[in-house]
Length: 157
Image (cartoon, rainbow, N blue to C red; front, side, top):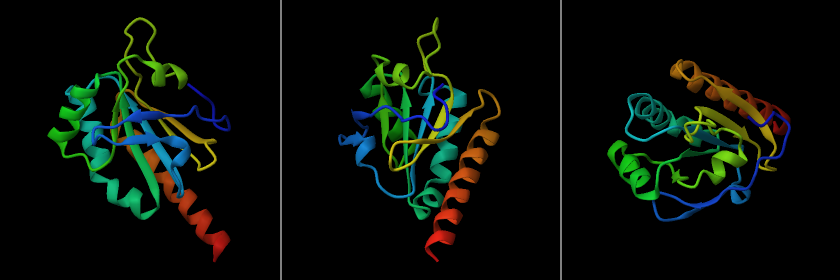
């Protein structure tokens, strides 16, 4: 995994909605990039549903959200549609994004369950990895986004 404080690699990929997601063009408070192994598996479905449940909360904090797995594009599109995901999702079949973010299991070739919270300058502000405790994973991300939001508003107010 990449450490907090390092610069996140660029992501420039087609999403399930047919648009391009480019990390360097995200503005707002931060971008939450969560990696998961495979679409349509119980854990990945639950994790994505949890992010969907909290998507409006993230948007209110002006945080962007994107999900990435090592599925192909059509599988990722079908997965996003099945969950009615309101946020972009990226299929990284070649593993290039997962490799750049150092989240690929060496022997399995799929992504580890890792989430990065990345500032608008592409500096990594938080890294979370919970393979089994999915609620803790989501809660840690929401807690950091809330801290960033409060800090930003305390400085501007």
